[in-house]
Length: 299
Ligand code: URA
View: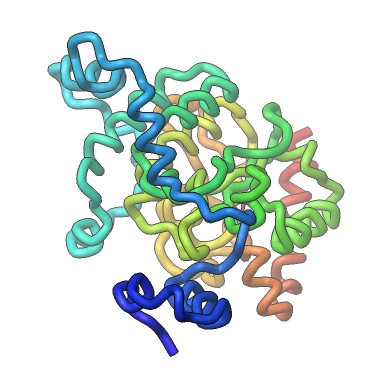
């Protein structure tokens, strides 16, 4: 049985814990993270109330810079797939274009990975931040020759603030170990930095607004090889359409206007997919061997 919210509000005192729990499950709650319930929107409102009033100009600094700039902000995201107009309309939240411009400007201004993390912590242009517990920035070696980008943090990552911290991360670590790599040899992040509610796939708008930060991360780490892990990262960063089954095993190039040269890029199956389709581990093993050969060829 599923109860409407209105019914629940009127009758909550008469419902059993089991009925209340079933209502929560039907509403999309998939885990409990504390003894006391928290209204995170209250926390945001309290923070806003405590924030010092803006001196004269109400706009945040980055937005202000953009409105003062008479020239269009250069498009630093050439790899963005062209979305059909209908899809674009569906994912555009109010302020999406401004958030995207701010993201390009803010990400372009930072000079180190630590600055990038700090800038993202202040960035409110991605709606996923409102429902996430922690930001999941990245993990590994900031001077790595290999960067891996997955799709989105899940529940374990949201709790710990570390990418690939759950079962798919355990498999990813084994995949890396099979070609003699560990997390300290690579850098790992995702197309978005906050968990999408209910572990859904991040939508095109969420990916687009985080992409300037992901690209800046790759620019700052300056690796030789970019590995996209699963469909969303492959489509957004490599600007390729189609399934990973068609794209894996091929080599592409990745370059942004700020990079001194194109770097090698390839796509692999997502470990989540391998956990549910173990037969695909065999082709993935071949892909990993090819990646190892490219690393060895770097000298
Ligand atoms: N899946 C991903 O794509 N990224 C994570 O960080 C965890 C699971």
